[in-house]
Length: 375
Image (cartoon, rainbow, N blue to C red; front, side, top):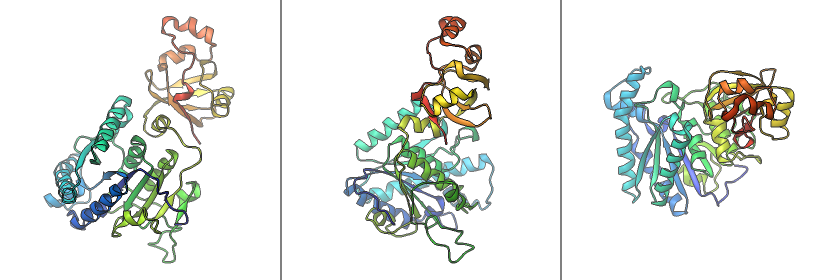
């Protein structure tokens, strides 16, 4: 790597893909778990805390049940996950236990992180596990999850977990060596990109449309996860999980994978949650003056600058904020419902008080502390 990871990093999230943990017959690769456990033990001896975001439940279920079809219905996938998750966690428990470590299973759905109180409950649980020296092993709860509350893939989940635990580094281990300047499957002269400071359109264009043979993620989802980690002030690394001792090598400064450097302007934990986790229930359209106020002057959104509202939402729901050209410029938590905003849109503070009466309780529709400027 052209830039090394600081030795002061304290908390690390490690995500492992199905293609790393299982073989071509969908059997769990015990030797990979053993290498992982050796690396995690070494990291803990360096005073670091490690969270594992694991895939592999559905794949392991395929192996256990002899399910050979690549495609499966949602009930079939949920059944496979129910069987495979047991094998997966048993392997983690046994292998880590042999090395004197205790693991704790944490199963999450999208709603667990989108709902603020459940988000904080999950954070408190993980903090308690850290305090007791436990290695949390996190997976999506595939046995109950439906499309509406699904994370999408575990690359996405790992980036949200990194913000949840305020991690210093996110490591994504897959079957790829890192980010290449072109598709190495098509171009033998493709070169590994050692370091990325900003993930822009050019970098995203390098991802192509690749997808894992076993899991659901490709390079584009890994880049999105790395970008979210950067925006939370964390480093990120994409590397091959098939390299023996890969974590020890990464954190010893060896040239492994692609390193992503956090940006200068990062989101705090709450604003990162708003930007990347909160579900958008509706939209607020604002005029030019209001757009300038919230994006340039970093002000709160007041009723006066609101032109229109779309969708139906309640107080404290997530909303997108767009200018009159339809461009989304921000996202935030609304202090008023859609029906209340329609009554006060374009009004001054005094007029808004008169219109809402005892339902008026805030000058701001979206307070700047609950607002994230996009782009």
